[in-house]
Length: 117
Length: 110
Image (tube, rainbow over the protein chains, first blue to last red):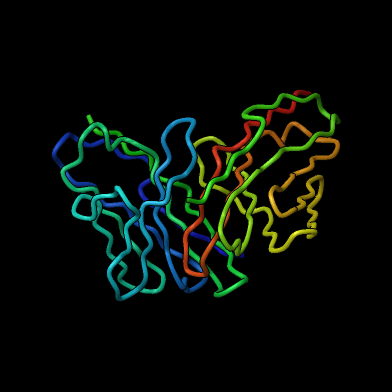
């Protein structure tokens, strides 16, 4: 099966610092990786789409300078929350896509709980 | 704008009591409709993908169906371990991410 590893699972940081979250597909090469954010009792909201070797595509309202995405290889994408503030506290989840066209399967990581104090 | 609405928001059932969860969607050019299960503090776990109206898929006690406007997740004779939040999501374009509903929080009481 497809496995996606996301680290760290929890992080607490001080306001103004930066935090890096890593997402790896362990047993497959992902055509695309995605980053989502989930606030309590809300749906997962797509933040950005990440492809290896190219710039990430951000959804409307997501600040690209605040949420830096690096997609170093077909199995690794990182999200850096820069100059984090309490309102950035949330559950961040990545997914890695296997397949193209009409038959795709998105496998999700276990998520990162970010708390900014 | 793509929209996904799930109902009910929460559902409490007795063990063995069958029921259905609803997912209504509006999307231009549906590429696929997905069902996921999410446990607290975890990422979503894939259940099904449906591609066209009339399609049905089954896995153990779960069966997903799709029409042109909505999808149902039927759960038959549920067990306490089926307790989770069930998420519905749609994909429009081939390279697009998923648009999720808020989910149905399902509790199965022994």
